[in-house]
Image (cartoon, rainbow, N blue to C red; front, side, top):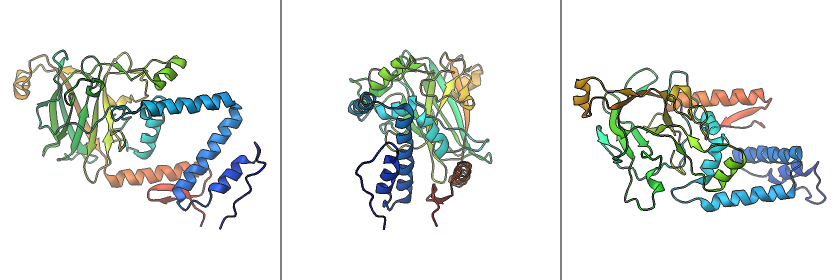
Length: 337
């Protein structure tokens, strides 16, 4: 039983250790460890920067405004996490990938649960002003074998750079679909060529970007999220609150390829946009000759591979910090035994 310390007459020098003692009876070892490190880093930040009361209050007001602007279809906190690089950092830590697999990246704030199931060959966008694009993809495991029955969540903007949920008068989902890979691990669909667009910058996160003299633009990309029992979730840009990893494919030579506002671009996810030139291919997939063509082979990691790599990297990082740790439910906690 830990005796609660006195909370009287605390100073700059002893406040941190006393807060840690007050929190120490927490029975959850992971929560206790997270709070112990958070308190240490936040207190050190205040001491290092000589944080003023006005600055502290300004930060409180900023975070309050971030919460107030959040809705069912706009997650300003995810946006804040994105623009300070935290989203990518957490995804990279929690979903490590071996060299022969597809990397994940940040989710972004515009995934929804509204997308409807669609068979191969479906059109996910109904924007008449968008440039038609044929998307041909495969899904395999790290041994190169096709994976059938993978649930693939896909979403993109319209030709103006807006997601469907950004239109107040929309009458249903558009620019998004949920598909499944076939027996050969193949899925394909009709979309439009992605365009660059700004992240929402009419709120507190946008004001912060302006203060930092940063632009709000994201390079042209299309989002994918993969899900199948036995495999680590993969997102290539994730649900608003059930954050599983995702990814996005980015078009090469986009003007914002090297200055993404949310730090999501990885070279392995940058693709060249081709053209359909083979008449037989055009006929097979129901497109006109000259139609834009995006092709990619995704490689998923099994849960076992991901778990082993995550634990290995976690223990390596803790050892480098000089900490004696053990793993509890796949996460590091202090080894006090």
